[in-house]
Length: 571
Image 1 (cartoon, rainbow, N blue to C red):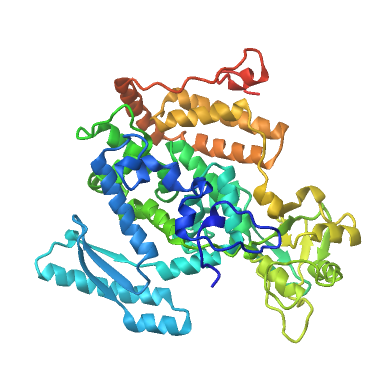
Image 2 (tube, rainbow, N blue to C red; image 1 turned 90 degrees about the horizontal axis):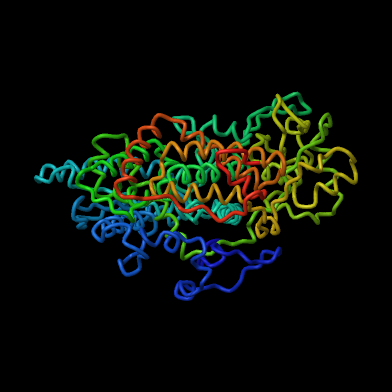
């Protein structure tokens, strides 16, 4: 249906605004295209993900460890992209030998008949069967620890990828801007199957499962709006992917920088960066581990998922789900490789706020937009303008329209204002709406607040990279080689402060993202967990004589020199 060919446009979208799809590209053709590797982790992290030692760029991990890691990845690739939701695969935990496959044939046929299923109910049946088969193996003399049971997820992956179609190009563009691989686009898939209404038992919200304190830090708010009827309408901004996508990826980038590499950074997104710090400490102090000068934090991470996992499982909270998180993300990405998303489904819109002190009923805005004679491309389904506004703004809890009337119901005719309870009120309209509304209702919309999510936003890249950014990049490169030192902590404190000042001086999306990443990185390094790691890492670097990267040559007395002087003023 919507997903049916190769992954070409996912990696480097180049369709016109009309959204017309290009010809299908087979997997064989795709593999030979140079841009195929631009953001793909198989190329970016070949040292760790390559299928053979010949494909690895250097000996950052042993051949045995590489094989163990590849076997682990393969297990989750099968789970995510081969086995459907009606399959239970049983293997031997140590050897990987396939013991048996159990399928729910009646439930599979029912799904194929109607095209939908209650996945929670399917999982309850699989859970019951899993308990029964483990008891059966134990009765036959097989230890429980020797039996590994995996449930297939392919159907839910297909649904999740289809659900993500309106936002996928935006995710890829943002990943590119933040220097992330395509693994970043699968975080929502793994966390919630791209469902926006879920809240975890710990309180994490949105498809990306972000904790409330971090949502508030990034200005993702909850508030209420008043309808014409007097009803109070809830607004939960975390339910709109375009409002939480950037905070999620900034967090992922910050975690990756704070722990030294994207792969353990993705794990930190789930397990927390402090568990990753504990993993590094174990790696650097375990007497059975030979730490070579070429080792990186990613080497330690691969060790933690393979040779070192038994020790970590025994001594830390890094358990089975934590171990499988990165392989699950990787398997989800591999599941999408035979697919090309229908980019005509990409959501284009304008994010809008009103001028301070201004207000308007939603029905007034919709009346103005209706005068275009249907020329606006809402990019969402709906018979009438109110239905389309409701679909375009799922974060606003608007009631359904009475099918008898074409107008907005009084209970949903909200008063749009600039702020509610101190929070900026943000809503989406189709491209071109801000200009049309400003003509008919001058002074209503704040022109500086309008943010366009369109083709130009997907393709444009900022050219604002300065010596300050290079200094931060140099620091992160040193962290990759276990640069968890108190000297580097002093540097990130200075860099974060300088990034904040730079944003105040030159406000832009790029500078804001750089500030947010550096500040979150600095916050993570304030902890006792960092201090515990710093002592171990400093000693290890001394033993291995690992020095940091030499600084870029900078002409003394220039602005660049002042920015790169990490002991003084970075402005």
